[in-house]
Amino acid sequence: MGDEHTQKRLAVSLFSGAGGMDIGFARAGFESLVACEIDADACESFNKNLHLVGHRGNAITPTSVRDIDLSRVPEDIDIVYGGPPCQGFSVAGKMDPDDERSDLIHAFFDTVDELKPRSFVCENVKALAISDRWAAVRKKIFDRTNPRYSVALVVLTATDFGVPQNRERMFLIGVRRDLYDAGGDALMTDVQQRLDSQRAAPPTVAEIVRSLGAAGSASNPVTCTAKVAFAKSPILRKSPYAGMLFNGAGRPIRSEGFSSTLPASMGGNKTPIVDEAEILQGKPSLIEAYHAKLLKGCKAKPGEAPKRLRRLTIKECARIQTFPDEYNFHGKKSSVYRQIGNAVPCKLAEAVARSVDGILSEAEASRDSQDAA
Image 1 (tube, rainbow, N blue to C red):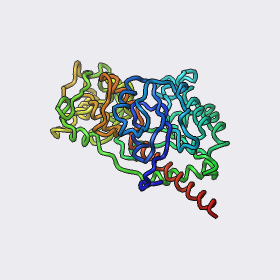
Image 2 (image 1 turned 120 degrees about the vertical axis):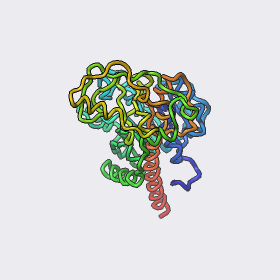
Image 3 (image 1 turned 90 degrees about the horizontal axis):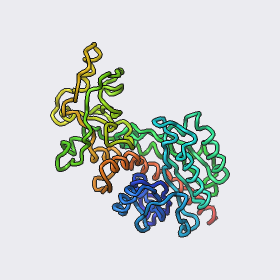
Image 4 (image 1 turned 45 degrees about the horizontal axis):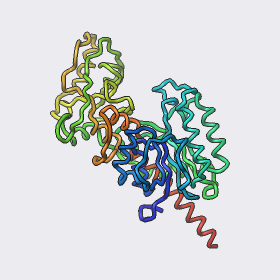
């Protein structure tokens, strides 16, 4: 079932959030029979965009993944996909094995065990894939999935797939052994080859800002009001875009480059910073000039930075996560920033979904030809 197929592949979407991963899977020809999200604002965002997220059901209401009704899901559905909360695993958090959110990844695989879909895709932070701290978690997941599935673990960088964000994420991909019994190594090679064929260059942050216009304009209206001030005790690094030159955890972004990972904690001074005058008026970078002065031993400036330094708007963040421009978010500004930061970039999810679709299609065709023989 490639692009030409008209019959949708049937899915269950877990930890759906505002629907970033769902948009990618919908573009690849998947349609969810059940979608599940516990955050009320994210549910409303999802419901406002049912035509984009590929959900066949009615509007969703806040529900724990442990309480969803799977009774209307038919046997032999194509996929269960989702990104369980990652705060417990993230290096940006406490990496606490006892964080109750860390346990939700096992709830994902409880659903896989119950439904026995043809495939699954579980997204999470890179640390879960590579950190020794989570070796026992990985082993538990592989031990429970390997008997029924060939399983591959891949770590992907979003910028390789048209997403203007240096976001690294792991994807655990399984295909049921009655369709694909070659094992995890073969599946890994197959997945990587299919992903390689979908690589695409993303736009720069400057291109996104220029296409939307100045912050606060009609085309780029919802701004972050958190002020940008010079750090009293700057932390210098070799790059002007590392260290800490300004207040808060929101670092400046190189205009002709890509964004750092957009965090769910955006909305205040953790929101990344851009130099609007550099982007829209072609002025020399204030960030780079200030960094150069500090390296020469000049004292840190006091007070607020010039207004040309400002934080990313909601539309810019949505573009950086590759949400479609017509996507309609629900909730207060802080909630919308959180929903965007929590999302799986749509184009990254689409690349993974198309790879899985291709593997399933090839496996099904092989099985059908063997049955015919």
